[in-house]
Length: 55
Image (cartoon, rainbow, N blue to C red; front, side, top):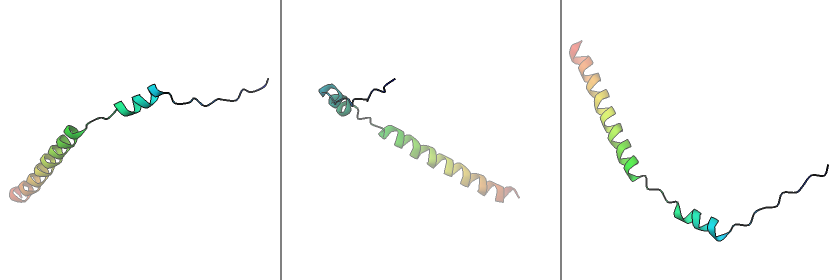
């Protein structure tokens, strides 16, 4: 059996348009991550302080 060569597909105008349309906005995710890090660091510091006070 002879193997067929793969032909590369030429990008069409629809493919180009799809690439331009997808532009997600993740600014809300960054805000949530900053809030999570701030709260986590606050709780860790407060636990460390409480451990010194209780001992």
